[in-house]
Length: 315
Image (cartoon, rainbow, N blue to C red; front, side):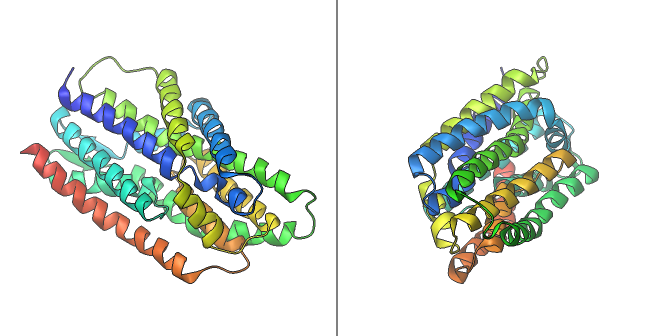
């Protein structure tokens, strides 16, 4: 087996673990922040639901994976291996750095930036971007913020004073959000596993075993929990009552569901943070500024890092 292909497989698994560790906790952040569930129980709940969502998405939401698979067309396996490894290593480093400061970043954005930078490093002769797939991916990511904020704000108005036992419903909504996160991001990283598996020209792998592998690794990362991110999103970002937290969870879940059905790769992080801001009674501008700064930096930093790493790997 080719060393580059083996490295790509390992890096994909590392990215899946990091995604579960740093991104999936967004699903339970508001439930933990409002006291509806403890952090440990929330992490366990999110892990189970992420596993289920990732596994089920293989059957019901294949379009998201197809979009990611078609983003870049490579002319030879060596170029594809260098680009994929550079993009994956960039995602791991960026997500780990953001976690260190408790900032929720989008692995979806980092993935697009990494692939863009790697493709530019290879040049048109070795890599070509698929305009249609990129427009779909960018549309999903662009919609995540405004749609999440609008959904959270609207649901807050609809639910105010109408929900009995909001803590119970918030736990259920957190479980649903984690399920839909698994469906969205699980498909993205399943696509990367399929791309990594094709690098050595071997027999195409079956999707179901790879989906189960993706689900298991993501669930493991989620079980470890990203407590700094949970605290940042669930407690520091905005003031939320249990009813407001329920509105944020349902709003983010609605965005993820619609985007999954349309085959659009959405950002779970952006949808959830926007829904929290939309549903919250007041938002901390300092925390919002920290998150916005990290998001603005994601594309240029990850793109440049993948560009340089691809140049190094290509020798």
